[in-house]
Image 1 (cartoon, rainbow, N blue to C red):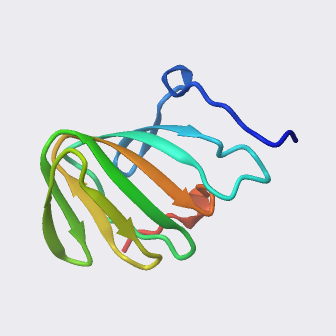
Image 2: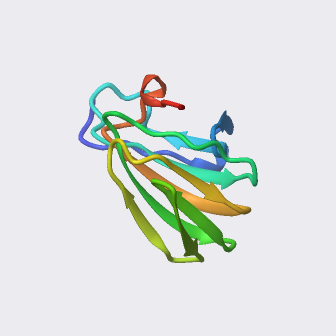
Length: 113
């Protein structure tokens, strides 16, 4: 592997996820310590958590709320949220976000109550 990775996000096919639809970069690299997702949040986002992943959200578009361990917080463009492992979370409202999972996204680490 070279010392860098490049992704053209708008050319990545969206994948359905608990929050809506995500374009995921760097998830297929075995050496990536993080991945980057552009996510179109849908109103029906499911509450979920991760046992290993930390996530950093950055709201790009829209206004709504984040539910974090049962508490609601208003979000708007340029709101950043740091979500630790074990925090039950979901976005409410139609939003576009950047999500940075650390370590890189692993679909086996999505848990629902």
